[in-house]
Image 1 (tube, rainbow, N blue to C red):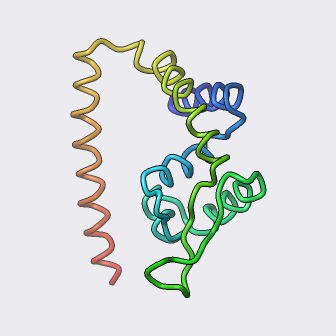
Image 2 (cartoon, rainbow, N blue to C red):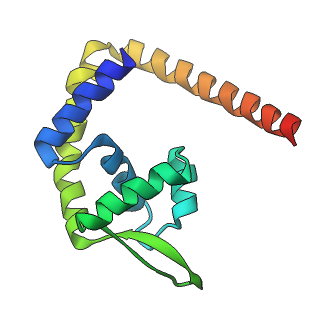
Length: 140
């Protein structure tokens, strides 16, 4: 079911904005930090390894949606920023993307079911974080 939802919402995203779900994910994160984000921090925030992010960054740069610039706090490092074109593409995508998520996911659930799902997912994330931290400590 998760893969079907992801595929259908992704298909709508491409039809509406010519963005893949992975491109949208990167743009959505960069939108939160208009001053720029270092690639490593971006990868960590969205839960990707650096090679997956690097591949997406090349695609987004080639399309003129993002660019790299010197980090104002450390000129030796680069930060990622959305271009004006990237911001426009993201703005055009967000409304249709939210409507697609509503159509394929939220419309199937009552408010009580959505609340229960949110509670369950919050508990699951907390558990994953705890187990992950414990596993990291054991490997150290």
